[in-house]
Length: 405
Ligand SMILES: Cc1ncc(COP(=O)(O)O)c(C=O)c1O
Image 1: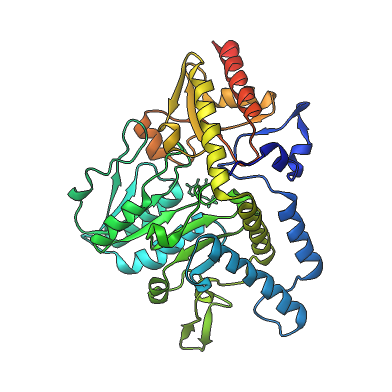
Image 2: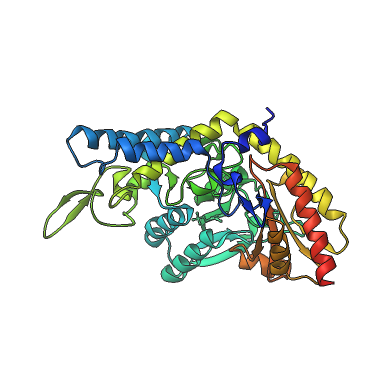
């Protein structure tokens, strides 16, 4: 069950470099993860041996390229335990997946008197599209609040009426909170609502099983889970996807086009207009293979240990405020502030030690407003993170206090 982060790091070429003369401590994996050689090699191999446009050509090379894309779809299906590969829609990223649902489902199924419930923890990607679609359709938008530890308060749920959509993340990118998405899905279904799960921050770190979750839609970004940028996927229930209008129009998504009318293609083509991100899909498939070979359970436990260690180290530093739940209910993400030192200054001091963290609102401005801050520092861990890097984080935070206070 235990992974060897020191050994895994040797698969990641980025760690062969130094910054400011020091080895790289990359503690910003929640923003985007680094890539192992296996992913880079799979993409290079695809470009060198199998590249052509997919789903179009009848020649052998095009068939090989199409096979590469469809093999990746099957890997994504198995990764989230979907019952059919036609329920896996390749998109650019989780943001596009969530916009697809908001536009294609929301615009056609919401109206005045309906309620869309999101949460105070939401990333803007699962917030702004719903706010926009609610405004366009005359529906209301309400926010499930968080408590002082940054955990969702589900005790007040029954006060909401006419709920049509419940949309939440499974893991918060700002605080690391792990939400009870299965409970939210069950509650939504009791009311005849759909449940939309943003798993962008969950899929890289914990096992996401769409059937066990009971969700209707699940959004995933490839670049956060060792894959390349420019690819992610939406899983959706086939019965819902079949009844939805397409999101983007153009090539590949049609059945028949005439001057008077266009009919739509089958799933998943109906939602995959234009040339597919085929090399990126091959890279994502290789990332899934890599994650499965390490084991999602081992990754989750490794990150739990690192989060507990980081919370311990940082809590010993005077003037540090930590946000979010206890380590057993959070992923490998630690958000904090240093009294009297702006987060950007903390991050800059850390950069001098080649420690990369994120400072800002983390695309969660409603949550920052709730916490009463404009920004936090965020350190986020992955399978290649080692405890020594957390020691360097703590040392840098101490140094930022010495410099600025
Ligand atoms: C929880 C969560 N949702 C959605 C997103 C958006 O992901 P992307 O930028 O890949 O679309 C992110 C990225 O930070 C995230 O952390």
